[in-house]
Each structure stands twice: as C-alpha cells, then as structure tokens.
Image (cartoon, rainbow, N blue to C red; front, side, top):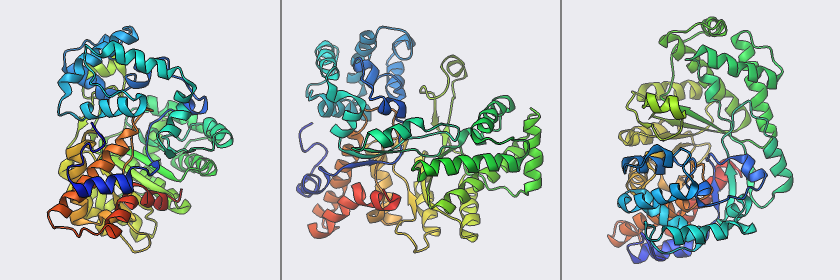
Length: 462
C-alpha cells in the first residue's frame, strides 16, 4: 500500500497527488455519535474505536466461524481484536482488507499486515497512540482534514451537543441532519405511540390527529433549521406515492393512536403523506433531501431478538421502485416544491434506473439538482464505486457529482474518502491512457477537485 496504491497509470497518479490528495473532507452523511465529539471522547483501546459497532467486521468474523461473544458479546477487548486479526487474512478481495490496512496506516503509521502473528504488536502500538491527546475524537477529525460533518439526528433529539460544539469547536463544522424515520414507522402501534409521546413532549404539541402530527414535526423541523441543519435524510425500503386525501390519512392516524393495527394499504397512504410533507418542508427552507432506499433489514429474527437492529443482519432488497419514485418526484415538481435531492440505491440493478430518473427532474436552476448518490453500504467498494461512477458518467454529468461520504459510525472511516479519490482518479486516468479523454490537466484537474470537494461545498452551501 504505497503512495500509488490503486493508481495504475501515470495520469491517475498525477491527478491524485496534484489535485485530490490534499483536499479537505466534507462528510455530508454519517452516523458518528455527536456526543463523543462534544465530549471529545478518548478511546481506551483499538477494539473500542475500531471494532465496537462495526457490523461490516462482525459479518466477516461470523462468516469466518468466530463465536458471537467475540463480535457483540462480553469477551475481553484484546480477545475480540485477536479474532479480528485471525479473520483479516481471509478477507482478501473483500474491501475490508484494503480499509483495514489503509486505516492502520493513516491513523497509526502502521504499515505491516494484520494477522495473528502481528496482532499483539499492532494492538500495543495503536493503544499507546490512542492515549495521546491528539487521538481524541475532535483531534482525529482534524488529523483527517475533515472540514464538515453532518450527523444523523431524530426529530426528537435535543441537539444539545450540537449547541455545545457550535460554541466550543470551530475547527470542524458539525451540523445535524433531520432523519424522521421513526415518525414514519407506523407498522407497530405500540412502539409508534411511545415515540409520539416523546415527539409531543419536545414539540409542546398535543398530538391527536394527523394535523397535530404535522404541526409537531414542523416545529421540530424549524428547531433543526435554527441549529444549522440544512439536510434531511430518509432510510426507506422503497418510495411511496399512493393516492390519498388528508381526511383518509387522519382516519388512519387516529386508528394508530387508538393502538389498532392498520393494513398495508393504509400504511402506504400515511407514509406517502408524511414523505411528501417532509419534502415540502425541506423545499420551503432550501434544504437538501437524501433518500437511502433498498435495504432488507433484520433478516435474522433470532439475532434481531437477541441484539436488535444495525448489528449486521441486513441485505439488499429488490422491491419495485421506479414508478413510485417517479410519481413521488413528479408530484413535488408539479407543485414547484422539489428540493435538491440525492438518491442512493442499495441494489446495483437500480444504477441505470436512478441515473435516468435523476435526469427527468433537472430543471436548470441548480447544477446537478437531482443527484445519483455515491455507492452506498454493500456497494461502497471498488467495483461498486466504479459501476456507480461509470453509470453516472454515461447517463448524467460526472463533473457535477457531489462525491463521497462515509455513512459510518466510526471515527476511523475517513480513509474511505481517500479510497474513493484514488478510484476516481484511476478511472479517469485509464480513459486518458486509452485516448478516450484529452490529456489536458487544465480540464481534468478541476474536474477531480470539484467531485472530491468543491461540488459538495457549493451544493450544500457549507
């Protein structure tokens, strides 16, 4: 993993080292715990910062025959790390192999390969550095040249840690992002009503009918806006675009408030209404709206009951989406209420679908107003990134792409931006070497810089 890692031709090497390498990072979607940044948390060891909460690694370890106690269980930290070290040699050709060694090198200066023989030495070296003040959460962001972080926050969140950071931490801008998934989770009336109780309390709104719900959510949207939020994010299985009336939705909502289960058709109607309401709020405030769709979550019932969500038991879904996505975007566009939008698909079969759908709703008001988002989750690897970049190039404008994000809960994930930049430069370099693009660095250099940094800065107005 030398300085020319992934850069397989002279053009790629020049593009990366002269134009991309030194740029700051704008991480406009991640799941970093904002409390850790506010409290400038110091990690006790490599297991806490690197393995805890990382479902990518847990999936690999389980596949390698590692017992659950070494993943999410109560095994001692070093024992968990040893099991990861035993697994790493088996991750060859999995992106985890690249990420693992890139992270060890960038954060700790460790250049050797992680395996059972080197585990103790790497553990000791990394842990010694983690005790130093410049390895606190805030300093890790500075170390990785992070300029902007957008966390993921529920409408009921107090944003107290964002307030603290706005006063204390000027080196990195940390903004909230509005993630109202729980406000749409109407499938389980008991859980949903408990959530509505919290929403009612923080918004100061008695929630009886659907209009009350919208009022409460609008207040929280205003609250987020006052705290610097300029983005929403939605994790949906598919898009919703049913026909509905406000009266119908109110009846459905009151059924839920009465703790009655509603039908699938009723679920789709109220989800459609809420998704559109959030989109209109975003447009009114000039926010960017992001939609991550296509995950089939919590497939393993036994492990879900034992561990809960986000523990490594999700996969790619294949639900129909094209017509509902089109209807959803068209309804907003017809009312002139379609905000800047980023669409992230999890199923690679949808690449061309999303790229062409984005083109339907570009209106000339903003460059790249509707974005085909970065390769996400299971697609966040070399081949997945290349497919996304190639599809966007063929069916849209790669030069207007807002680039990479971490989508991670880990403070050690920032080399993913470097990984993306190297892949991007290599892809463009290959075309130049083949005579498919001009070897004109006055064009290519700014293009790379725009994709890696400038486009996001301008698009989000950071």
